[in-house]
Length: 596
Ligand SMILES: C[S@@+](CC[C@H](N)C(=O)[O-])C[C@H]1O[C@@H](n2cnc3c(N)ncnc32)[C@H](O)[C@@H]1O
Image (cartoon, protein in one colour):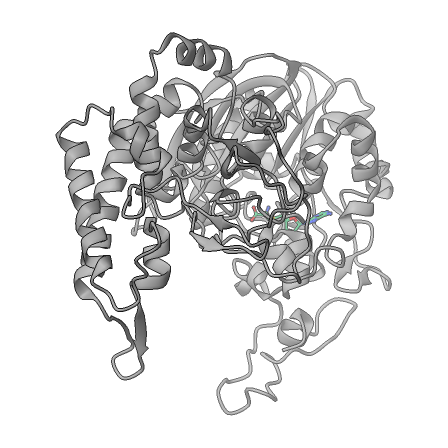
């Protein structure tokens, strides 16, 4: 199917593409023609029909009705603040098919202005709300309204829209209160998925928009890569202008927490599960109510709501704190000092811990030093693409974003690695896109490192690091002729490692003894495999890659492990590691604000 018009085109409006559902050709044998005149019936799945590029550009994830209705509470709070005698408008610049408006009263709708960029959404919006709202933009469909699947004049990021007189008349009227109520599109062009599809450039037409260009004059850095931020920034720039004006907006917390796009008065908010917005992702979306006045708070709470199978709201029992982040690991904790006797004739490593092949784009110099223990990446504040943002390798990662671990001080760096694994072990929706990595506790952390208070914690992080599968340190001979040792393993079959040495002074408790015993089981089973090479000190990951072999059985559709004992021990170890991480490591990571 080429595009949305081919599928749902109808005979209403100015553009008449008769879609497959009305006159089936390709699916002639499977579906009966849909007789409905308009697409009102499909209002809640129209985001799903956009093609991939369009989807990325529009970031159309519709709001679940249950959430939409809950957020009306915030809208009503905003309406209650309208000064006596004032008119007010509720503006939704990206209304889609109008889900946020579904539960509004007739009175509320009579103050509402809606628009949306996508043509078929606009038609549904216009049919269901056109005669109930104060304005829809554009007010009527003209011959040239359909513009390559989009609606002419409805691009909220265009200059034409910002200057639109229908809205401007209210902005310019001091006796009118402005309320914006929106679920803006969120599409990040830098996301891995985006890059994988190689559509970054093509799909980012919004990046050339008037609003984004203006935003770039005031805001620097990666925050301008996010479509949602352009909506949020522009709300305050062009629309809110009085203390009783309001912005109620759905968006992941990052814009406030890490990117600091806005600094306004927080007047209330909820945390919702992104899974109920037509995505598969369990993550936290904030619906926040911001006032126009500035505010420098560094923390606030949200009440979290999930939706159960009966489509009912379920409130979480504990409030979810949202705390602002001011510094990244890379600012405070990355080690930028040069290692002694370093040369530039080393090798670079891929994500899998082995030497990167020459076809990859190299972003760092292949440094080698006898002082080098490895290379650590614990990149960015958030947990998108966690496995690409968390690496532990025997030498520099080809695309950088990390730093060289020195043999002399590696221990104090390992909490960063531990923090970068948080989301893997905490997958509930309240954590992703809410909890982030920070270096805000660095003064306290360095002071306590110095005083020796954290000696035990550092060793606990080391133990975790040695037994965690994202530690991709592997032993091999590089193309530079050097043998790369894995110093972060407890396998000492070929001589001791730095980790083993450090942990020899470790005062292990029962849980830790159990972990060590389980590791020994893994190692013993690994040594019995046919693939075992006696000259290697194996880390867990290298065992998983090289020794725990398997094949896929077509008949049963399952993976058959050739060494069930080894596989079983690895699995049990993973369980123990998870429990250990969450009970012992995580509380300290929060205490020192590695996680926040
Ligand atoms: C996250 S959806 C929300 C839709 C609807 N308000 C809801 O809550 O279900 C964002 C909407 O913004 C629209 N949109 C994307 N870019 C836009 C733009 N530049 N101007 C206006 N609307 C846009 C999309 O088509 C999509 O319908």
